[in-house]
Amino acid sequence: MPIAPFVPDTAFAVPGRIVPSNRAAARWQPARIAAIRRETPRATTFRLALSHWTPHAPGQHYMVRLTAPDGYTATRHYSVASPPEDEGFIELTVGHVAGGEVSGHLHTTARPGDTVEVRGPLGGFFAWPGDRPALLLGAGTGVVPLMAMVRHHRRRGLSVPLRLIVSARTREDLLYADEYGAETTAVLTRTAGRLSAAHVSPYLRGGEQAADWEAYVCGGNGFAEHASRILVDGGQPVNRIRIERFG
Image (cartoon, rainbow, N blue to C red; front, side, top):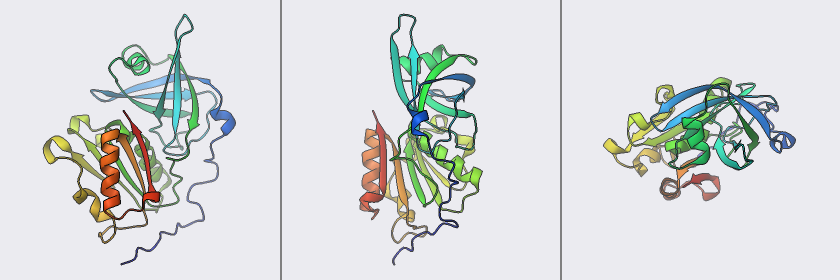
């Protein structure tokens, strides 16, 4: 049975103000650590207050730069977890990478009140403007940009369909575990096994929750390959799959 395309209530479901500024994205600026929140034993959220804030599109990221007293710099890219409605702030959820210069400093040394440098928001391919159904698949810290989409969807009260399938080893490893609602399916691999076609098929062609989805996949290389293959085998058009991978 053909899938009817989703038609948003308005011509564009997200207000026009969410148009990231290229000029702002090209400029480094100081960001004060306003709060630090532990999410899992290996991941922490850093709430940053920006002096020159500009709204991001859910799915975008920022560069973070640290500068040592001798002038040595280290930079890393981190996805934004907070929605664009969180005016004046961004939240970056950072996994602690063994030997990581930036993540190591943030996890072991940084304190509220400290300042780091940031540049962004950056990236357009993985951004979700809120104007089309979104099927989100993430694993580990790959759920971070997807959570920005979920939070934006809730804050705006959008009617466009959105579903999230998130994979983690255990509930202790599940980022934002207490925030998920009816839109989310959590796959805990240590007890339930790996993400499978059975988890995704209800949303694809012939499934009871099928829609004209734009699919967003984010996670490590292995997860990204596996999840995208499930989508393609289930009939999701290749040109409607956006992938962001790491590792």
